[in-house]
Image (cartoon, rainbow, N blue to C red; front, top):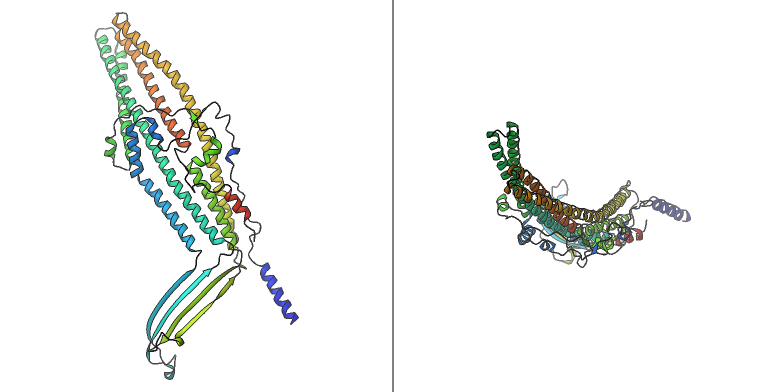
Length: 491
C-alpha cells in the first residue's frame, strides 16, 4: 500500500511540475506622468486662461460658421461611423459580462424510427416503428475563481469607454476641420479681391503702355511686358476663383452634403483669432481635457485587464453543471417518474500541457499592453508639444502681422503720394500703377497672415481639447492599469 501511495504522489508531482506556467512573462511599459513633462520655459510669459468653451467656435464671431458646424455635427457620416463603433464596443462589453453568469438551456424533441432486426432482435423491439420522446433542461456555470472573466469584462468596458470618447474626439476634429475650411474660404475671397484689383491695374497699365507705344515714347518691349502682366493677373484670378470653389466643396463634404450645398455658403466675415493664452496647469490637466489622451489611457487599462485574463488561464478552474430530463419510447407516457433522468456535479480542470498556447497568448497580451502604453506616451508627448508649437507659431505670427502692417501702411502712403504726384502733374499715372502693384502685394501678404493666424488659433483650441469636458466615469482610475498589472500573481 505504501508503494502505491508513493507512486500516486510521484505521478501527481510530475503532473504539477509539467503544468503550463507563465513564469518569466511580464509587460515592460509604464505610462508617463504628465507632471514629469517639463514645459515651464516653453509656456513662460503667457497670460493664464480658461480651457476652451464647448462651443468655442462662437468666439470667432461669425454666425454662419456656427450654423455650419451645427449642421456638420448633425449630418456628417463619419460621426455616424464613430457612434456605430461605440455601440459595437458596448455590445461586446455586454457579451463579456454575460460570460460571467450561468447558462440555462431547455429543449425537447420527438422522432420516429424503425430499428432493423439486424440491430435488435424482434423480441427486443427490432423490426417495428416506434416514437422516441425527449425533453431536458441543463445548467452550467464556470466559476470565476481567479477573476479572469471579470477582468475580461472590465477590459471590454475599457474598450467601450475608449470608443465612446473617440466618438467625442471625432466631433472635436470635425468642428475644427469645418472652422479651418471656413478660414480657407475667407482667405480665398480675399485672394480673389486682390486678384481682381491686380487685373484691373494690369489692364490700365497695358492701356497706358499701348498709348505710349503709339506715341513713340515706349517700345514693343514695354508693351509685351504689359501683356505678360495682364496674362499673369488673369491666371491669378482664375486661381483665386478655383480656391473659392475648392473651399466650398471641402465644406460640403464636411457637412455631409452634395456639392450644391457649398454654393450656398456666403462669403465669411472677418474672424477673430483666439488670444495668446493657455490654462495655468497645462501639463498636469491636459490629460483630462484631450479626448484622444483619455481614450488612449482607457486602452492601456483595457490591455492591463486582458493580461490578467490571460494569466488566469494557467490556473485550475471549477465548473458546475446539471442535466435533467424525461425520455420515453413508443406510446409510453413521457411524464412519469420512471422516464426521468438527471446528472449533476462539479468538475475541475487543470492545464498541464498545451504546446505553449497559453504562454504565447500571455506574451501577446503583454506586448499589446506595452504597445498601448507606448501609444499613450507618444500621444501625451505629442499633445503637449503641439500646444507649445501652436503657441510659438501664434507668437511669431503676431510679430509678422505687426511688421506686415507697417509695410502695408507704407505701401498705402506711397500709393497716396503717387496719386498726388500724378494729379499735380509731376509723375505719370503709369508710375502710380507700379506703386499700386506694391500695395496690392502687401495686401495679399496681410490677408495670408491673418488667415494663418486664425487657422493657428483653431489648431491651438483643438490641441487644448476643444472644449472637451470629462463626465463622470470618463477617466480611468489613477494608476489603475499599472496596479492591475503589478498586482496579478504569476502562476
